[in-house]
Image 1: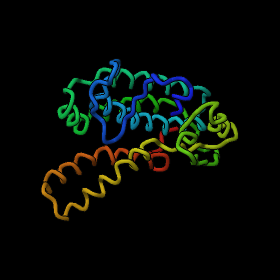
Image 2: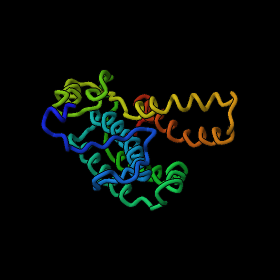
Image 3: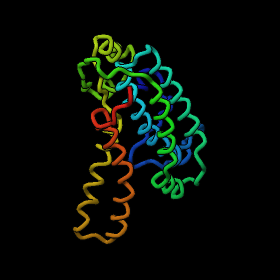
Length: 222
């Protein structure tokens, strides 16, 4: 309705929901929303959350100004190539199994961590920890749309604790997990439900670790 009012009736929109990860080719061509794309987006969010945590945990304590931003840029470019060079495991079940069972991204994140370990930091600096919360877009946005509040807080001698997007993923998966956990109730396929629950554990575990990383990640060497 809003697009119609603006005279943009033919403006194309693509919707991606947790229950529509494999939609096939979109009408009009140009984009195919399939399992490799959807799972790549999910794992991209999880990896980006780790980078964001490292960024905000490190920059307030860096000894050489700008080093954190340089390593962040290198890490983003490295992970870009990691995702681009993912092996092709088909369009459906093969790629789902690979994403859930492979340590491909874990190895990549270990390499990223090595880059961050080269940053010299001074953890003896006293900083106030400031947790960002509120409306989803505002709390995750960086830049002028949010008045550069995160950078401003760092300039005011604060360590910003930004919310990971993985919290939202965990929220979306939670109803499904709860249903599977109560599989002792009457079910025609209890074994399939148990397998589905185990399949979701890597994602939810990654999401939980992302959510608590700002307080539980090991401190890097000075």
